[in-house]
Length: 346
Image (tube, rainbow, N blue to C red; front, side, top):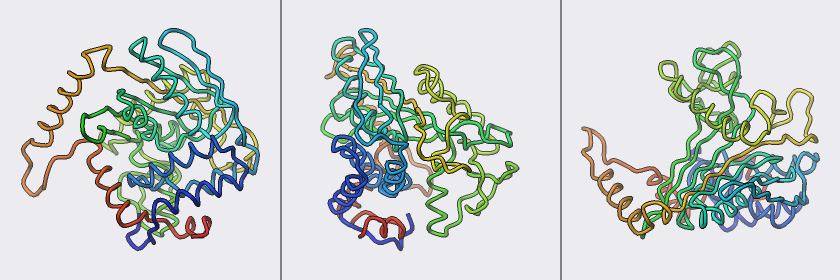
């Protein structure tokens, strides 16, 4: 986020986001989940998936793409597996429900693998991985999205940004948290840079011919994680998200999605049938919760105490930067881009 952006208290933002979704007709249950997920993203510093998406969701609610009052359905298929039908509502609602279902399955079976169908935009996948970890479970969350990332050496869009998020409980501390796109950056980051008039870093996006560019107004696709030399890694990991989210759930492949923002024909009334996937693991059914807690505490202490290269300050574990950013934003306020500031009436 641009350092010149105005900052607002998290509580004020939460109220404004919920009010906007309520005015758009969203049910209390679904808007509560969406607000929770967007506030998570804005607090940890993932501004591309934070409160700036409120306007988009309101537009899709008004256009009919999103069901304003979805009725979630849970189909338990086996001791450790289930499917959640999101009823074409806000994806955050179905995803948090999937975590709850996964936890209940894992308490008995040790693992709870939950696919989600008939859903919509997920937001920050880390929000759902974190929700499981905060209840004491190792949790994985992922989704596939509409094509906007080139393959390695490719010159056309193929995969979505397809995030992979993992989180684990840590005794006496905030959870270990990894939330990464399999593209170099998310497309919402490009849109955010356009809004702020900022150049992109090199090697993260490309024009219509697949050539890398830094001007966000010329971007037609993203590049996979790893860039020009090692992008095959990011491109393959994007396929992992598609495997879990689309193939196992029988939903929509990346290239078959109606574009998130409507596309050339402006369709914002047809549901997208997005798929997501959540895996919840109960440490008690493996090494035991107490031993797991001792091991992850020792592991993280060793990691943070590792030797530091010249010029670097310290080694950080996944989640360290995010929790520091949460503390900073809770104290100083959450930055909001000018357009979102206007939309929310701040």
